[in-house]
Image (cartoon, rainbow, N blue to C red; front, side, top):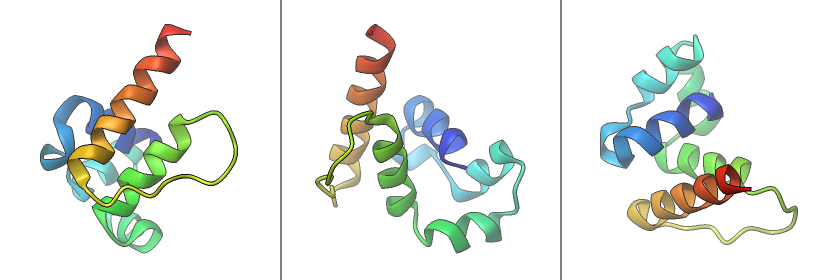
Length: 81
């Protein structure tokens, strides 16, 4: 689910990404996505956490636009290395 969400967040943005789209991309039911993450903001945070290779506590970003920017920055940094 997180991998599908990451792909959608980075290509469609926060507003364009839906829980239904994540479910379809992951081959899961939308109810499973809601059960696992409860909200789209929680799913975005999980995608950000998964993109960051270093362990440790993470700063939780509550603004969806800033959270998406962090996700894109992390993904770009990983692709460059």
